[in-house]
Length: 257
Image 1 (cartoon, rainbow, N blue to C red):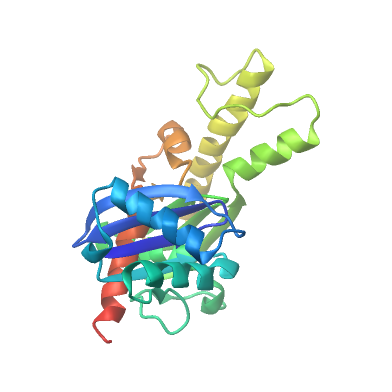
Image 2 (cartoon, rainbow, N blue to C red):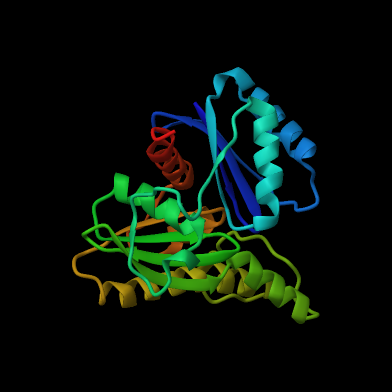
């Protein structure tokens, strides 16, 4: 079994996976102030809560869009299981053919999600990841990554709204009973939930016009479960997508060691 960690700007997805089976998966806040020892304690505690020991793990892989945490997490994991993690980045084999202006600028989280989607679903693909940013990207029927869009994430938009509008307060992301709200809270919930769902539907429509074939659409990310069920397109929710992709990339690189 391996430890798989995906580090986003808001959350860290941390879990254990072996032969495509997720032993456990959890999310924790991304905290740049924590030390390697603090992360090691958190990782060990979460491992033990799920009935696992450090001896159950024979390797690790980390994908990160927060460079400041890479070395800290690398040391934390090595201290925990005795193996140095593979870091997804330049020089790492992913198997994904990337055809954009500058492939080196593509976020490792997008790469990992696309690797997993290519392995599990019919192509062409539209892959949606709803984190700090909402990314919607395309892999064509030849498994070539073609590009996508980056949109301010749901939480970022909400925080911006409440910060800059004195009379608007934070709300839950539960969908209201109807689109047309009759009070401030429902108006905001409708805008956030149905507005983001409509935006995703609209982007899928536009992207589909530029894709050869009917795409399979997959979504992942912390807020996907709140927004995606309100979309009108058929979208597969796969909360485990990133861990699956990390295991695939780990196996491609570990076999060469």
